[in-house]
Length: 147
Image (cartoon, rainbow, N blue to C red; front, side, top):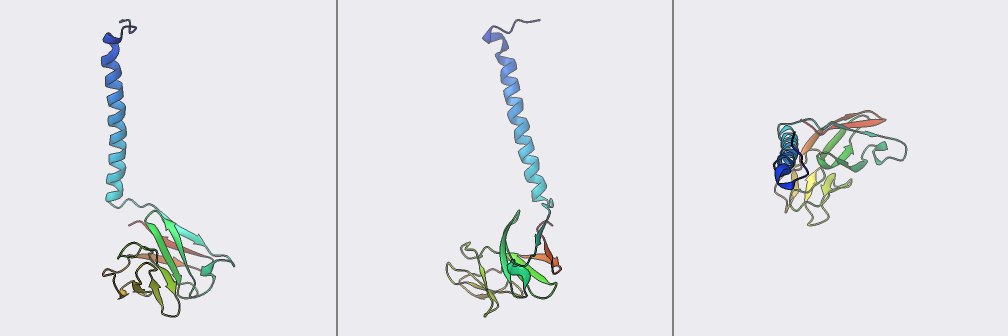
């Protein structure tokens, strides 16, 4: 057995172990990126609705964080909801719900999106908001953020 007190004799082993650790870490990161690129389900987002929640009443909306980014959820009926990306497709501002117009409005440049479909109602945005499937009850709503 070799005495590894000499730097010259053991540097090959040390270098190998360091490179192996970096390659293993790189492989783990690559595989996690590949799995998300192929639709790995991040999980559903469930929001509980209590008396203080804006979603407690029809027409109420809330912006929430999710693995897919910020999502705006709108209550459209007793147990019906709509969910869209809250990120404006023009310059990335976070939209808010305007109940009088029934539009999502971006505070940055005034883009408006139809709240029922996410389609552009007034530019400068050109692309609609991404839509997510939402289902719920009077006490909670679940948004499918994965595929």
